[in-house]
Length: 50
Image (cartoon, rainbow, N blue to C red; front, top):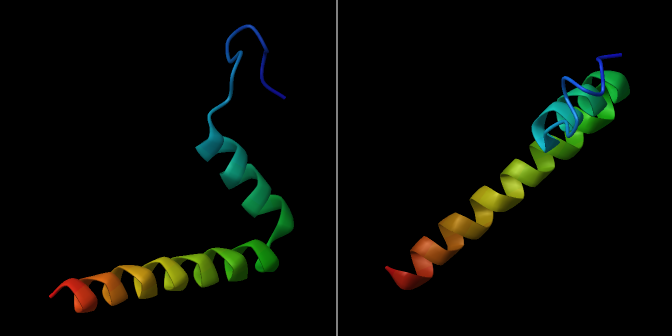
């Protein structure tokens, strides 16, 4: 573990990365689903507003 004084508030990205490494496959699957969902929303909005 890192020293609390040198890193009083670890960033969300570091926590997410650590969590992803610990959980393995399920987190990668959730990450992929989230990415696909966000892309689908963006593409849908772009199509509707085009």
